[in-house]
Image 1 (tube, rainbow, N blue to C red):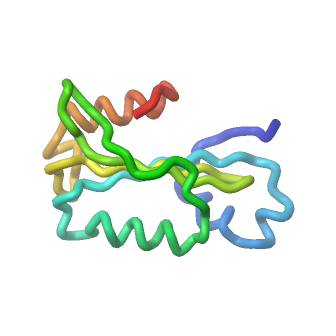
Image 2 (cartoon, rainbow, N blue to C red):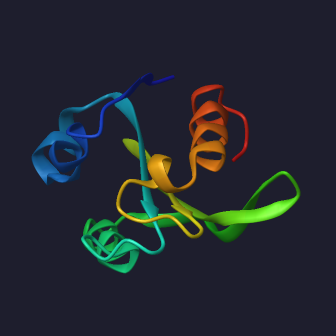
Length: 116
């Protein structure tokens, strides 16, 4: 079984062909965006993720907090890394500032490896 570690900056390295041929790590990454972010729109982040050429592992679906839709998530995976991308409904560029309860629930669930 591959060793696991979380590292956002390693994602670009893992995407290179040379690295994926020699790497035995499973890199776990987590990225989130407020769906009202006008600085870096969620769709631009999704475009960047899709440019990596990683297959969708778990298709778009809603995630909930206190019985309400709190946003949407999609997961990507290949042999060397997994990327979880989550939107926070109604949040701007600094999602925890706009939606603190939802953002905390999202991060807590991810770090506990509990489904978002």
